[in-house]
Amino acid sequence: MENTYARQDDIYRPEMATVVRSEPMTALERFFELKLDSGEELGHLPGQFAEVSVFGIGEAPISISSSPTQNGSFQMVVRNAGNVTRAMHGLKPGDKVGIRGPFGTHFPVDGEMKGKDIVFVCGGLGLVPVRSAINYVLHHRADYGDVTILSGTKSPAERLFVDEVEAWTSKGNMTYMETVDRGDEEWTGHVGVITTLMTDMSVDPRKTVAIICGPPVMYKFAIMSLYKMGMVDKNIYVSLERHMKCGVGKCGHCQINSLYVCQDGPVFRFADLAEVPEAIQ
Image (cartoon, rainbow, N blue to C red):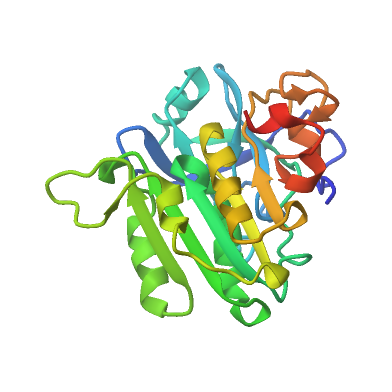
């Protein structure tokens, strides 16, 4: 997988974009729909990210959550976690931001995943970038085998895309399971860490690709659960989060040994990380 950024000659110059929608999702997360002022498509692939500039404040890397099959605009979910993201939470429809990208590698939706059974393992905000691949696969449903989505959050109040999840499950052409670390008085679903959803799962490891995205602590245990099902490293993909800054491999903020997450990732085949154990710690 290669970086597909080729939309402009100057990779450091943001393009203007307009906020189309801005809606709260949880106490910390906010949903945004944006549109490039040029009228062009962003041109991303599932799993990539873009650098978003709030003028006078700064720039931050944000995962692209919508599928490339959605034309005319693109979507992001932003957690209020710093100066730039705090400023983004104050944006309203009609406000302007700068966009650089898309950057990074992507989930192999037209490669190794095609024709295979797919298992998506999403913890917390991990559902945000993986949603792009999920909707891509559902849009091209006949090109894939069985689809299973596992989603885990700390509490019911932190669940994302609740209405969309209901739409996914109502279609009946995939399996969706979710859990929370701790429930509340109204929660009637599963309680436990995400790997408890995997205890009784079975897959055909010869024709299954697994996608994992979530907090670093989740990766080791999710991969161990996949091993118990017979999965091997070459059929497991992980999306890593690191403190990225420039997005083009120049600043070194996201470097892990010889790897730059912004360029060599964020999506990695797990087999390619065998010599870099620090990547999932």
